[in-house]
Length: 229
Length: 297
Image (cartoon, rainbow over all chains, first blue to last red; front, top):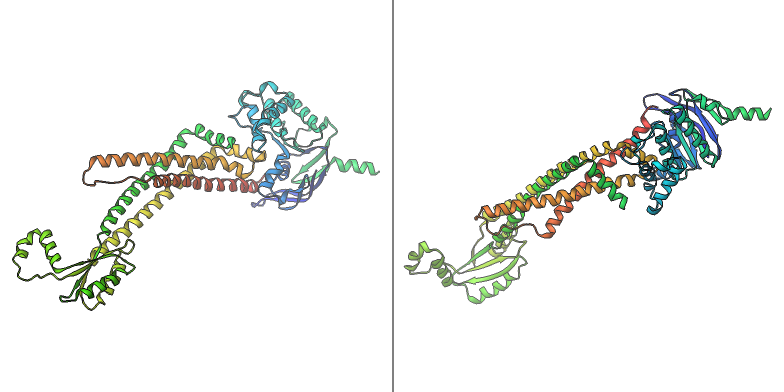
């Protein structure tokens, strides 16, 4: 589903964000991207949804060479992805249901299906009763669930999560993480950047650790090596 | 489509002051253009009236046979520039002079010999009433052997030409300056809206909205503001026109815009709104895309 081959990313000011990153994520996988702040996790996710382009190397998502996409092709790719962030990125002047519906409206979904689809995903993230609430009336955990519902409403093949629990307390973190696991259980690939190592250790999911823009550890390599012995 | 209108109208609700400001500036610019337009159309109309009176008079040598004159009249009437030709005999000329030049009535009455020569009076077709064409016709008339002299008020015609060109150029320049100012203002107000809604646009891009989808509401907003500005400008122009008409008796018969001209002003406003927002949104979207790629992580 995702394949990076010798990806480098540097900025005009000389800063290097990624160095020769290569890995492959298969259908149905759940992958943690770990590392300190500035290790390159967010840049990597940005390359996956074409907000940035690699300086060299190739990024493939769902068979598309993302680095070569332009204009509307980028928009079409993003409709197949769900993206959530640490700061939720909700529209403050719209209700939870409107925030979710917004993602459908901008993709030109049929008007008569929007309300039903929005409430279905809100129910899926446990917010069936909060559709009319504005973001400011919701807790951090609830806001992240709304963002998650918005990411899910287009039935994405891949969910990208950039520090989704970074602003949440422990309880909310557990709730959101459980939702991500459930979503992954339904077959959606989940790539989650986090520096919450407790969360990572709780599970057996694949972990890719980054440092100074390079991949320094991939649990899949370890598993393969163990299998080969 | 419904969404497009909803999003466009939303910005009016969210930023009423800014929207009001945009509409007012468009209205003001179009109002100025409109006032100039009213002056221009009235001036043009007045000039047309003057132009219709542009005449070329060819004085004929005494003793020229009637048949020669009749034949020449036919030839002259066939000139492409000429609308009609009329022959004025010596007697008719004198009678007219007595009638029109009241001050000299006595002098004309006591004359023993008629001093006025017969003449051919030419009226030219519209489009040929400028100095160049009138001059050319005069030259051709001088080619006829029996024609003594040709008069056509060269300076007067040239001045008319200048005046007409000047109003045209002045109108165009002032119109363009104001149109540019209005477009810049629309662009700036749309840009302010864009900055205000940068987060929303960012989210729209994230969830897979195409650039045209993002542009749509802003373009509609610009066009709508242009439309409202145009309507307001027309209303102001009409108000000004009515006030002017009531306050003066010197300029009788001043006219307002024809419906198609009023429509053009509104269409022009919409075009300005559309143009301003198109430039502004295009630049903003390009900058957003570029910035994301240049920003260090």
